[in-house]
Amino acid sequence: MNFSLSMEQRILRESLRDFAENEIRPVARELDETETFSYKTTKAMGELGLFGTFVPEQYGGQELDYLSYIIAVEELARVDASQAATVAAGNSLGIGPIYYFGNEEQKKKYLPKLCTGEMLWAFGLTEPNAGSDAGACQTHAVLDNDAWVINGSKIFITNAATDISGGVTVMASTGRDKDDRNELSCFLVESGTPGYTAQPMHGKMMWRASNTSALYFEDCRIPQENILGKRGKGFHQMLSTLDGGRLSIGAMGLGGAQGCYDMALKYAKERNQFGRPISSFQANAFKLADMATEIECARLLLYKACWLKDQNKTFTKQAAMAKLHCSEVMGRIANHAVQLHGGYGLMKEYDIERFYRDQKLLEIGEGTSEILRIVIARLIGAF
Image (cartoon, rainbow, N blue to C red):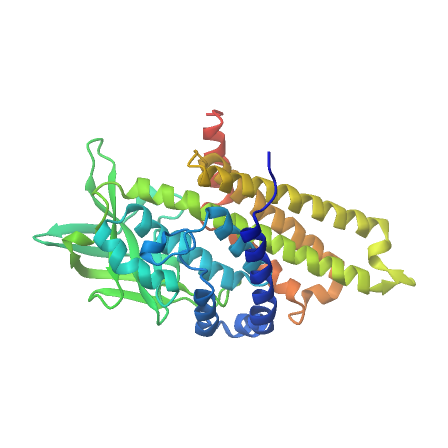
């Protein structure tokens, strides 16, 4: 077994760590406070090749392995979850479905601009009444001559309502299948299409500098050829998309945990009480040791899941495990880090306060911790 990163992966990590520290950290607190999506930072991330990392060069991508992409998300999340979310959603949820399930014409039309970051794409899955039970999708599409007519709504959708959002892949019911279940299909809906509206959502506790939107479809007509893949394959496409997306959420948990730990260790070594650094007290030293150990375990689990994907092996179980474990590890480490900061950890002038808030979504988005435990239980044959 080889646990070493390649030279290219090490260079990628070092360069992105420098970028995140020098370009993102100085503005992260202000962007969070003002709930501002940063076009400047998004453009810079695009110029670094952070969009389309796993897409072949023929479509404008970087043609890197999936682990390299995950390392990139991890390094961004180490400094700011909002910017990491823009990249993670832009790749896993925006680019991924088009690359993996789109036809050649769709790939050539959308991927080049998506891979440069000059355009973002969203994935419309969650609805007001269909979250964990995604199969209960109420948004529906009806074929009317040579066009699909979509009606319904989506909520909590990332990257859908910015000035550079090119559109959304929306999952909708297209009738009943042979087993009388909800037949689900995915469609590509471009921004500006009559009947389609994307509305930014504000007042979030977390990821405040990431764009989150509510989507509305009112007799929204799209060309028949805008269906993604085959009719009735939307649920399969959604599950496959979530497998890859869970690795990126795992990377956000891992990177965020690392960021929390780094801040906690630095603060504990600088903060003096009773005439000595608080890191030297056994209660705190053991806490830091446990934090470091959990991060190392989380990294090994996540990287193994990425290795399986890169080897074209089944990775659904490991993706669920990695997402579940990394998100909950960050929760525990963020909690310990705030505790080590004491009262200062509750103040916005200290970044740990933002990390503490940002973590919670990781246990909810792209499969709640409860749903992931059901997924894992089924895959190990528990029921």
